[in-house]
Image 1 (tube, rainbow, N blue to C red):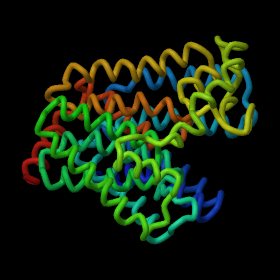
Image 2: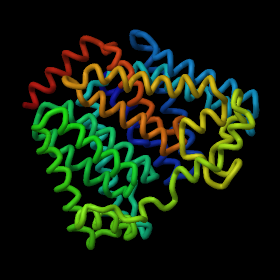
Image 3: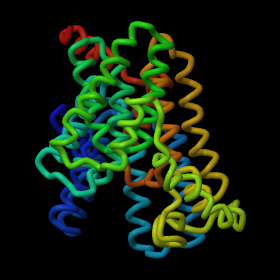
Image 4: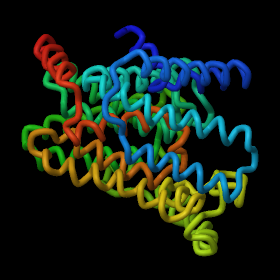
Length: 373
């Protein structure tokens, strides 16, 4: 059963169906995507059932029903997407609660290393790398979630080596969100425990390493200059503010005002529907697609996890840092329904902050940590 679990979680967390779709075409990609959902459903059916993450289920049903009634450009794919997302939330919740922090951390490390392989073996003229995730921003999200979880790791070798890998690989994405949240998380960690200054120093060492090897890799020169200016004089160049997300959000405000209660229809705030560029904000997308009720459920769930995690900040800082990361990530992308790895981590966090993890898994986790020390 453990092997079955690992197969499914690697398929999801490492975006294997997406890689197959990109490399071998729609037919193979769709087949593996459907197979992954089928395996997830089977995993749920053959295991003992536990409490469902009801806020996520309520959001999923309300979002798809309301947005679909208003407008669904392609009904066939709408119902397929609806079914897959509900399976992800319900069955993925059981998978998430049966995954301990060590397992999740190592899988995120594997995903991060794919970014490095992308840079070394498949260099791009664009100079931003994404590995398994095909999009640099999504790859950056993966590294950020790993950075947050690193504060739960007791084994120093795994912790510091992993954090260095996550920082270095995250920097290769040249995601502005990654750099900002990475810095915020490290500063918060020092506030929580002064001993974490070592992590702070190690993180900057990884950034310096990136600058050192920059000439050996094809890196995005414009965003590399941001790092140069930050390291040299502590100032961020103006280019970081170009193509501001707030300008993108502003394009969609009028559409939200026109239909605030039921929205404008399924995926209406994605790219190529109203404008060439999508809204790049999960909260605005939910509000714009399906109206105020799904928006309040979606936002409220992440805000709840954030405030709930504050209660254990001193003893479990990784939960707070992860909640902060997930809450902030919603401001920078509009793909909540296709970034399956982010949703699995969200479900994992939900059960953790509610102390709903399985006792046997907590015991296994302690054994793994102790054996690693």
